[in-house]
Length: 225
Length: 314
Image (tube, rainbow over all chains, first blue to last red; front, side, top):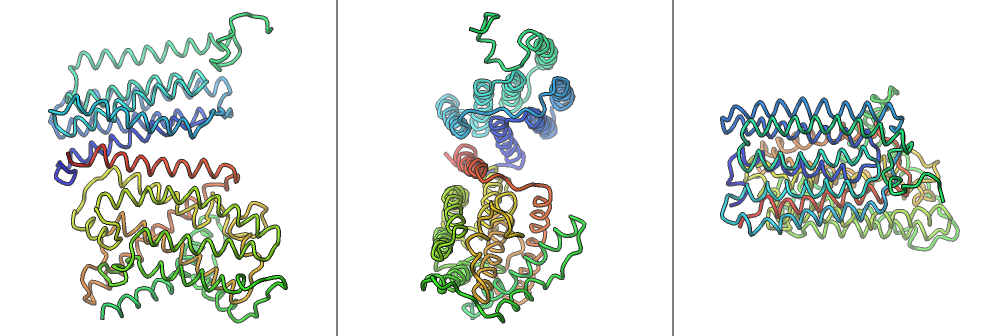
């Protein structure tokens, strides 16, 4: 079925899917931590809009609650907390030198093709929108992992982890029209707790190795050889 | 009759281009709290340059003196195949989008040759930089254009615009990506900030100005005019492919006047957008340009991918 034959809701959801994918790519190529956190907040905002849109068009009122939770947690609280930590540790001026940025970006593009290829036979029987949106959310998950592999700062790893969760949340909204409320609340608070725990970890890593560069964690001995 | 209209449209294109440059400068001056020159200033400058005697360096070969005419006519030919106020004109049926890219490449080739011809250090540097940038920008532009042509299943610009018009308002994720990719490419190809600074020829990092440093008189006027037409070409491409509403589909006076009004409003808005981005951004280092253009390529690629993944039928 072509896109021009779909209804307006489907077109809007597909556009949102594309923009969420774009946000993942933007995060992948971002060397500055504050901008990375800003793009992460934008992705959260897109998710909120998607949830609100599907709540409105499917008349599914509990999705409004999860949209509100996303807005409060992923657009405001977590980015605010990460930003405060980055500013407190004076890392806002650091530019992380990404090794072979173009290669990482092209790797991201091939991950997107790969996730489409993987999902294509599985959901052959279900609706088009589900296959496409699932393909995008799987690629958001894989891109989050690639972000964690390619960046060295611990803050970037946390953002990558959170964007993996964004991908799963998007799949949940689009494919199942919203999970049960209990599950969603559980996940939301898990994310919140994870964010707080990561904050404590940052502090500990910082005090023990005097940096948030996780490559330095490979050296276990205290004396440089 | 339609041929007359096509010629009229091309003339209008060429005549309006300096006005667009003047409007862009006017917006930029106001955003930067400076006194703006009059909107007609680019016309006066072109007139002044045509009256002056061109000075040609002693070692210049025939390429140097012919190049401005070749560049200007290639750009005018490119302008003749882009629908400005009406679609379905006979000129649009002659050539498609790939020929358009070819015209740009042709003009650029002669500009780079002219830069090298005179033998100054600046000219050679500018030419090599221009070729570097264009070799990176062209794939990105083609990628964005292929997204359009795959959607419309034609490479003809006029038919593609009609296709987009007939579909009405469809939210296409691939067009969003293609639009951003084409905007980034347009900024790089027309030598605007952050890739090149069009306002000065006193920088060591200049690109376009370095190539034309030796030109004067009517040669310089032709090259300046051609680059203004090129800026407008990219503006019209972006406006008419992605927001084609208002373009005339019939040839009645009313529809044509409406089409003209629509394209003027669209170009004015695009110029405001460009002047805001030029005011906010600083010029990049030359070696950052490849990152910028690979991002444009990535956007084009994503547009193509999302056309295949999200939109195509199966």
